[in-house]
Length: 471
Image (cartoon, rainbow, N blue to C red; front, side, top):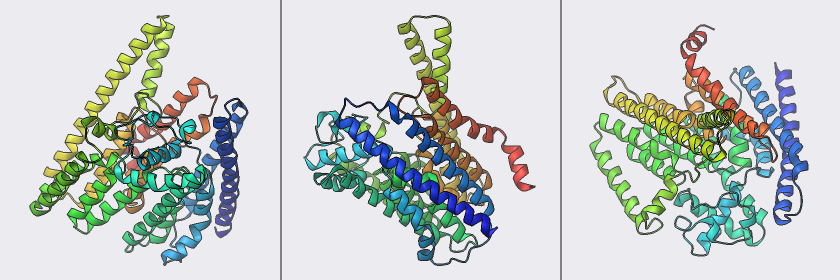
């Protein structure tokens, strides 16, 4: 068994180093192509595919390690755990981002440093050295807490763009290590404390998306972990405060707030409810007279910023309708109109279904007997997963990473763990199939691979639960 683990470790290390090198090549190629538009990036398709294969292999090795790593480990101190994990965390930090979001973060930071409100003014309205690298040009969809980190990191772009990139990546790496520490502390009564902490720190999805690609979801994980710790310790005001800080980082925690409020109502925590309501109103008023002076500015962070569909059930439906229209030989304009009407209708339907599911969850929190804090956290997880899986038209592979703290802290909730890991692994198909000159059908194939395995797991819930209960 020890020999197998050493072999897995060696393979993972070699693949991680190769992936790191290829990400550097890709990053250099992207910067060169953007600052030298005459150059052709077609030759880098194979590089993208190799990156996707290497990332998928790391996820497979990780799953094999999870299956084998069931025994208690000898490490009891977090520093020892960090030493064991440090090589992979450092490789993730050194690796250059494949995502272009980091450039948008820094661009928003430069806008802030120049006295331009990124929630009122679009990215396109301001010109910087990062402008040629941007893929999106809307107003900022990220909260004021994120904007502070953007501005700090952007300050260092005066030295070089890459310096600013790595300053922000440093924040993300520190955030990831802090998250691991918080999980380790919360699991102090678990006999699997060490293994679960290492499993979180070395999760390929987290390392790749939150450290290498420096997505803000690392700080949403921090918010969620603090929410869990505080709610378990019955520090209700702090739990809501942690959620509000998460919302000021990125929008998604807003859907957790009503669940928390309903839980406090059920617990008859009127004093806590009063305090958090005053706190919430104070934050809203403060932001309204500072960074969000108009309703349009507020809508900036309440909107995904795109009207497109990708990586989602919506994308599959849109593709089916479009292909049917083409088979019927309708005109291009008419086909586009019908496709848009259908996808808009499907979006409304899925939003309605999600709202019904959400309201049922609120009723369950209030009326269900023996409703515990564990039930609340799992409902937060399920609600977020259902939103991503069914009601989010524009889904990206790092979104599901915010569910992994719940997986680590509530590993005994086997069906949620199974469903979430299926969703996370399925999401890795994005990097295997999406490259600069990928055929159109590949984008739909990504959506199919992303959502259908998880939906299948949900449909087979009863059989899977029986298999888990009686292996």
